[in-house]
Image 1 (cartoon, rainbow, N blue to C red):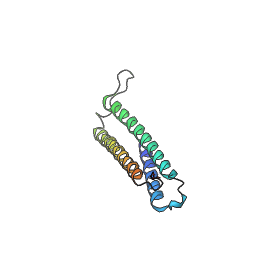
Image 2 (cartoon, rainbow, N blue to C red):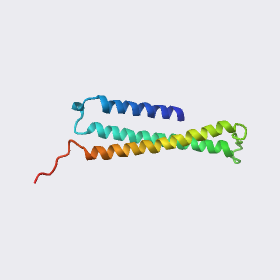
Image 3 (tube, rainbow, N blue to C red):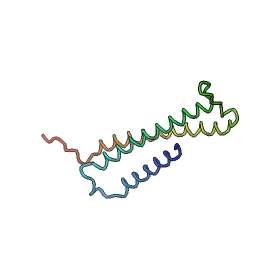
Image 4 (cartoon, one colour):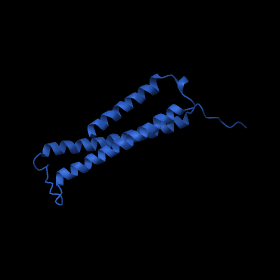
Length: 122
């Protein structure tokens, strides 16, 4: 599920990037496209963080086990696999932070250069 979520988020990002770069602005109704893309990016961030948190929880369970449910440790037998999984979770969290940063920069830049803004004329 973690890999599928990251793949869907990547495809979404590529689709939105191509939409913003190659689709003409004549289909944009008073900035509605920007608001839609921003909202979908926020949903993507939420889904990615949920998937990364779930995988981090399962990794913690694999590393330490659970004595109450009699789940044994897995990482003492497959240590390299657990180390690679920990690296993937760390990379996912770094990617989420970068995605949030790009989204914030996009919001602030769009607000600064908004062609639909009506200046108050005196």
